[in-house]
Image (cartoon, rainbow, N blue to C red; front, side, top):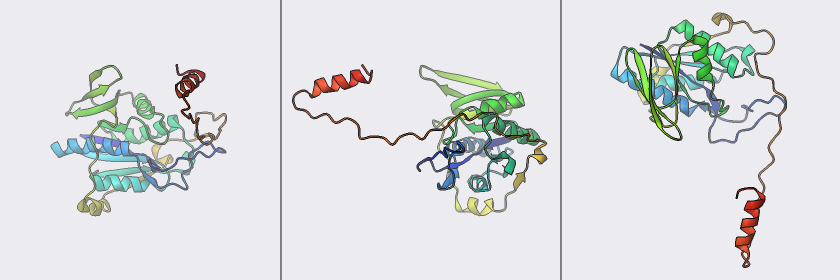
Length: 257
């Protein structure tokens, strides 16, 4: 079995996110870049299955700028067998639709049985790329699973909603997105870090994927951007015997009661 895990290189989750109001894109120049933690959880699902079935091959794939190779190297040190980095200057500013189209082309070349991803990235929070990839490839999608089980012919898992828990399954090939309820990712050990340097990391361009770009790579139109105002100090209520009335008046004015 061949499993592909989608990996995104994102600004550090614990850092302050900034939006470039000129381009409408996240400012990535001043922040530390890391492999998205939700993708590491997806990788853990793949590696756990390989622990039980040694014939399994695990590939990590990322589309992004030069720095994305650092995220891929970390995944290799965690145990992935090989990595693919889609790197092309024409892809700068890609939206979710273009990203899914390009990743789908790479996945189709690899002939994978199962595609694992996080349910949403921590920088964009769009949460639609796994579904778009499933549509491009014409395979089933199991989204937002908290647990995943894989056999030679089927993938299944539990999907938690606000009201209930669903048990879902589908035949392979398929796309699966996982949530933060999935198992924590393992840490790279010293052996993994050293062997990662010898594992194959292939760089692919758009032309090698058979994709041509005409005009803007973004299929979405950015109308306007506006920087959110700094958070104010809020309203202070001093208890002079009328604090409860002041609080009720405030909640009513904000339409909270």
